[in-house]
Image 1 (tube, rainbow, N blue to C red):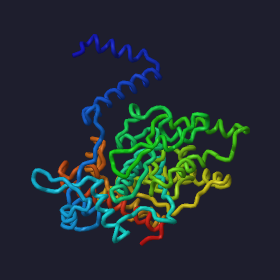
Image 2 (image 1 turned 135 degrees about the horizontal axis):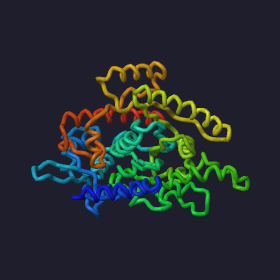
Image 3 (image 1 turned 180 degrees about the vertical axis):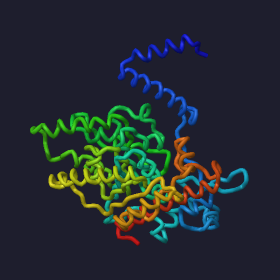
Image 4 (image 1 turned 135 degrees about the vertical axis):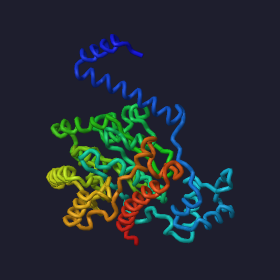
Length: 405
């Protein structure tokens, strides 16, 4: 335990630092402690793993009965499972997808992915107000779609890289230089193929392009590139994300982009790459006022991009109410206010504020990864129901864009 004199000396040394040195020191200390915490949650050489699903959970994912899933597991035909010590069957997501493929032989609707003529769905999840639930919405949407058989690519464009951390990659330790999307959209000779920065995750059917602080470089490089008249202007900054993703089109059904919480060059390029836009809104007056500024600025900037040849044809644009508290009267009034203004552009379902989501996040998990046995069952069920309702509505919008009922 430090003596009083040692504490005074430590405080003096801290006060002698300049602000940049203090911030650098705090960042280093915090980074080290986060790594220790991460190693406590996951052993040093371990990778995150997705839990196995009960037959009832597998049945819900497939849209069939529990008894039918158990029946298929006993019939062979490539369908495998494992039994717990209590004799209950469990299934990995790969095994669930095997059953999905089996069912799709006779009924194609069990296979939700793209078919001939369907275009790649690129969903940009955005808002420049921090705390709006953007990353939570992005990660849960990506996982929901993967659980239902879509081939999904998650793209972390936020330099804070919370999506990457949730999907098993610590930005400070696991993502090196030129290993983010910046590597595929930069302006110099170090530019690389986008396929080289795609990572497989522990979540079957879900790949990731991770993020870290180097994404800021695109914001710094773009003004210089725009001012350099000798550069080839065939690929303006707002085309770069879309052009990079285009080369991956054959590998995925849906791309989910977690945009930065700023309206910069990265966000504009993501919006031009998108086929659909999901704007998260926390139903508080300050947040709604901030969103108003976001919409006004976005409109002005996108009109300039449109005149320069940017593609702004969207299949749909929706507002998602996040962190909603059903018993909060003022929030209910704001939601009603937004619905009166924007009508069907506000999703019917809302992401309810849930302790289940928060509890799962403590161990860098989503509610889809956490088991029902890990928390109070009613709390868990309400959280899953809310997430499923929101993401199911987005799923229907995707299918409608592909002209499916």
